[in-house]
Amino acid sequence: MKATPRLSLLVVTTLAAAGTLTVDTAAPAQAAACNGYVGLTFDDGPSGNTPALLNALTQNGLRATMFNQGQYAAAYPAQVKAQVNAGMWVGNHSYTHPHLTQQSQATIDSEISRTQQAIAAAGGGTPKLFRPPYGETNSTVKAVATRYGLTEIIWNVDSQDWNGASTDAIVAAAGRLTSGQVILMHDWAANSRAAIPRIAQGLASRSLCAGMISPQTGRAVAPTAISAAGAAR
Image (cartoon, rainbow, N blue to C red; front, top):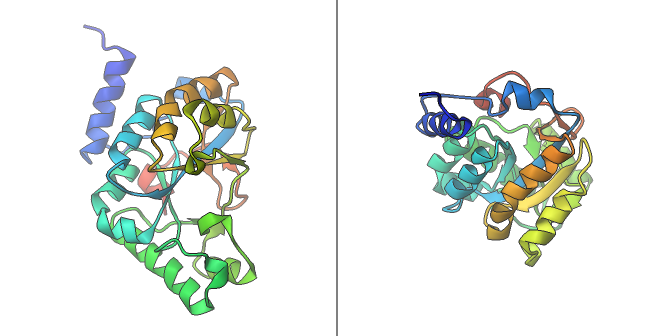
């Protein structure tokens, strides 16, 4: 019996989740249709919500960058590994999500360094991307991030999911993305998870694909032809 695309995806996703397969989830035919790339990002994970989020992303052929808090990476190490196995990229979002611009340099250093360690210990590789909590930054925050080899990533489009945005509003926000741009969403936001199928449809209708965020430029680009685990390093 000829396997259906949905069944094939299910098999691949199951194997990847089990840790027996590392896979680039962008099919060659899909990649060939990409006239640009956008960066889907989810902050504040991992959590008990992460499996459902990863399932929604993989079922719709999307990859995203997960900006994890160090405290949650330490608490949910299996979910960090699941993010990588599902083809996602893992970034640093501080350890406890403070207002870093109000902290001492030593505290900023601790927030960033402990998160690097927690993510690496959980199997997420050594992040190259850093998103400061609340998008707040200054020269000290940037200098510390640079010391750890991190590129600071803010966003071009705010989905407002943190502010109670509806699924329709989140879909509309994603519809404003242009090639190279990045959208802010959150691991815990049910409406963002519900929006994923329609976000995927909207991107496809505009010949845009979900890409990786370049540590060199901070913009969304085509995924490199290496494993997800390697991309996180």
